[in-house]
Image (cartoon, rainbow over all chains, first blue to last red):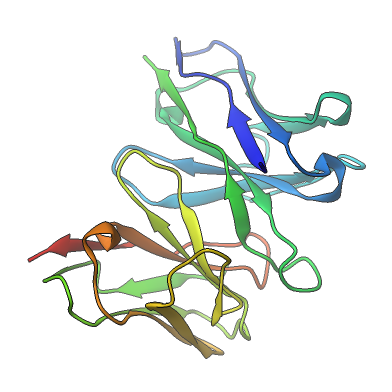
Length: 122
Length: 107
């Protein structure tokens, strides 16, 4: 079964650092881009950035550039999202998702999603 | 960034009704438009990609249409399990922005 499994919920204080994870299985992890999506409480979806685990090529939304770091360890099929100094406004659910290859090129949607990691900063 | 505007933001309909949700892009995105369904407490699920292609395993009562700037998601006969929030997303350019969502509720 193709799946992405994310790390568990986190409760942190402002100023603390955090790294959450997303482990892929059931497919070739290095062949698909993995993206991160934020959903603040009661709000919509925001695309944060994306990484290609095969070579760690990474792209960020301008809204999140410099605020978070996306990385991957292909040896353990895991992508990461990290903060160096959390703020209360980082409180949200964070999803990782696999960009599919339903159409040629890089203009695909997310076909597989992780279950989400709730981050609470208070 | 390309802005995606969905309408309505919410709707109420009975089981069996035909439901249409619209999504408008601030510039042409060809057919690079995806639709997702999100139920409370769950991750989004891809329904439609490339504006009109049904993702594997998605019931045929869901359909998508449109190109350029205007798109629609149609549910031909609303079922109890379809009550959820629906999001469009453009994948034409980075960042691939989402619409604000349409919440479909039971009438």
